[in-house]
Length: 288
Image 1 (cartoon, rainbow, N blue to C red):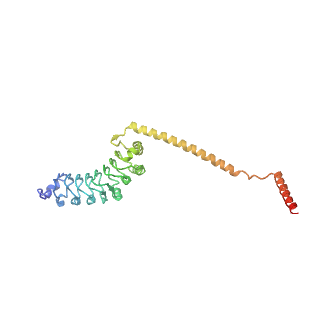
Image 2 (tube, rainbow, N blue to C red; image 1 turned 90 degrees about the horizontal axis):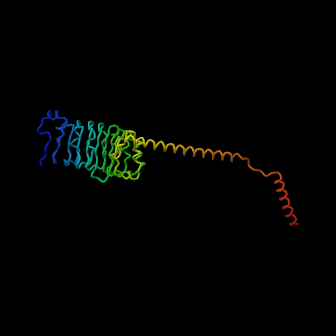
Image 3 (cartoon, helix red, strand yellow; image 1 turned 60 degrees about the vertical axis):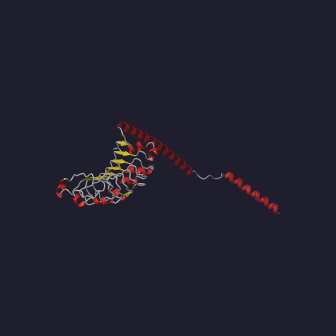
């Protein structure tokens, strides 16, 4: 197929008026960024795209669907300040990096990358902390999720079919994304390793409405709350007993330390002196 320029049959004015134009491109079509400056939404699935560089000048772009391509980097999109939705599932991204200036990004889909394991640059994730509300990173062989704890505004998190298994690592995520309403951790080792993970997540996130594609009911939340209260009472009771034992032991130690040093009674001293004198006289007699 010969190369074509999108919008070649339209004037710049017509393209400006059609700012919501969604382009379903055919394979092999190239882009002329100058004629697409007013475009706000693009659909580029299955277009055999290998780079996002043609889109770096589309400063009005708000929505980009580019799944099922050969894209290896998101860096070219950095600086698109109006971009709100970005779908890049089924590409070849190995690391999410170089996107520190996407201040409007609310939804990011990077599921099922065709790489060994997907990694995240901490600075890029931190830069999305106040805006990103939905993240789909399903099926990417992700082992550590602590870097995602800086996504403070996150409400929906899809992490199923990954390799997450460390609860200490996951606890950092629990503490960081307090606004979460939906999370999916299905088919991760941690789910089998921690059978009470669902209850722990319900306890940590008051806004949680769905865990592993199953809704969190009011009755379940009340049940978990009562379990936590019961455990808190047991822990408090154990601490009280331990404290009393420690106080008792300390008191005994103080009493033991305050006892006077025992001395021999007067009559014992006399017998001691007599014995010493007898032994001395015996030795003198033998020497004579």
